[in-house]
Amino acid sequence: MTNELDPDFAFTLAHLSDPHLTSLVGVRPIDLANKRVLGYLSWQRRRRRIHCKAVLDALVGDIRAAAPDHLAITGDLTHVGLPAECDRALDWLRELGRSDRVSVVPGNHDRYVADRYDRTVGLWRAYFRGDSGGTDFPFFRRRGRVALIGIDTAVPTAPLLASGRVGDAQRERVAALLTQAGTEGLFRVVLLHHSPLSSGHVRRKRLSDAAEVTRMLLNSGAELVIHGHGHEERIDRMTGAGGPMLVVAVPSASHSVIGRAGWNQYRITGAPGRWRLDIEMRRSTVNGFATKGRETLTWEASINRAAGPRSC
Ligand SMILES: [Fe+2]
Image (cartoon, rainbow, N blue to C red; front, side):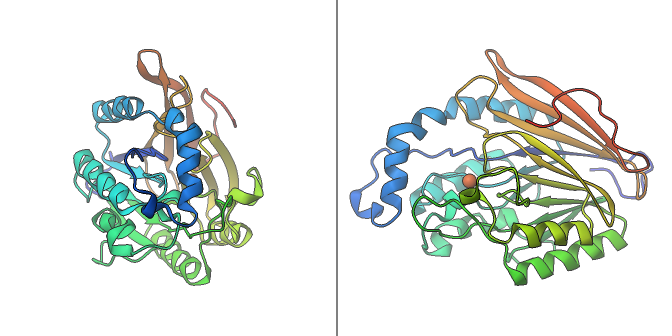
């Protein structure tokens, strides 16, 4: 990683989401009491054919070849958040890389129902441990000139709902972290599972406090907000107190349909007031993964499009 005083500063961040890497084969009926029964039936009927481990393995190979400085994973590692699934996901995280080079926020599937924290999402705490040593959300991880701020949006919901919530307390802490990071001249990246926006997504999948979250991000300032959840790629451009803010959704990392699995690479260069962000969108092909599009954003002028989709 480049030293923050280096004029040639460059930081590459890989982003994947919604790998749904676990299998529910052999799950005992006693483990499926409550909402997990519906999740199991959904997996049995449909999801086990949508999410393919071989695709995920190929995607991870593609990320390894790119050798990014850091990897961000924005949730839904599991299907119904069973302890055995979270344990398997921990093994997978350990295979991916050191916990100081991989950051994780949980998704709604990882907290499908209320369960013991230390046996489920808490197993991944090394991957969301902040620089201060704490494991509460939001986490704050500084890497060179980049601030990584992770938000937990996953809350157990009623059947058929996949909504999330940030909450007043977490929103206040995120606002303070963004303000402080802005004062220090850092490029601020916010990680969360759900979209922070109140439009563009069906209501049952939104944050219940999306309007407040969007307002907080725009008022406090963030350069890049990355999320998953919808399994669809999407880019929203907004302008807040700190200038342009890009909200980027990445598709599922394991979708079996060619072209629908993918990850993004963000290359951050420059310095406060003159940042440059280059996005490379890698998507599945018949032969592995290839670049589908690129976007470039600079902070000293208006947005410059290079190539690739504006919004999908
Ligand atoms: Fe999700």
